Amino acid sequence: MTAAVIVLGSSSILHAQTVVISPEQEVVIQKYVTEHTLTSVDVPNVDVVVGTALPETVELHRIDAPDVTYSYVVVNGKTAIVDPGTRKIIRIMN
Image (cartoon, rainbow, N blue to C red; front, side):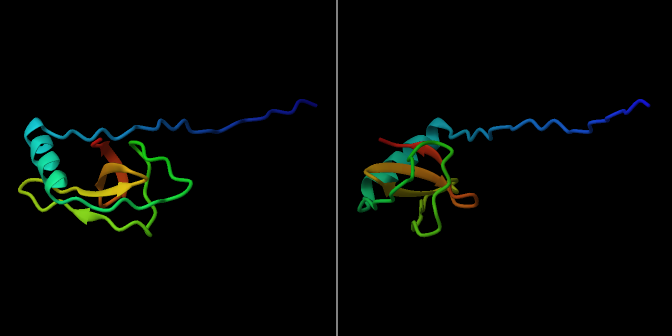
């Protein structure tokens, strides 16, 4: 008697979403966060690096500038630009 085992699987490829901030946006964002300083919030057990999703307890602040759809926050002493839809850090400004 022969037994056959068929393994069905799917391969999933994770794609890192690359966020492109134009040089013009970079200048506008840098100027905005410099002029609108925030107090740093301490968030234990959170690595402030690109790709980290910030918890809902962290208040995001909208960058009120033309053609910029991002928010920012200062977490653990680092200014982070955040995609408000995913709450993921897309850039560290320090």
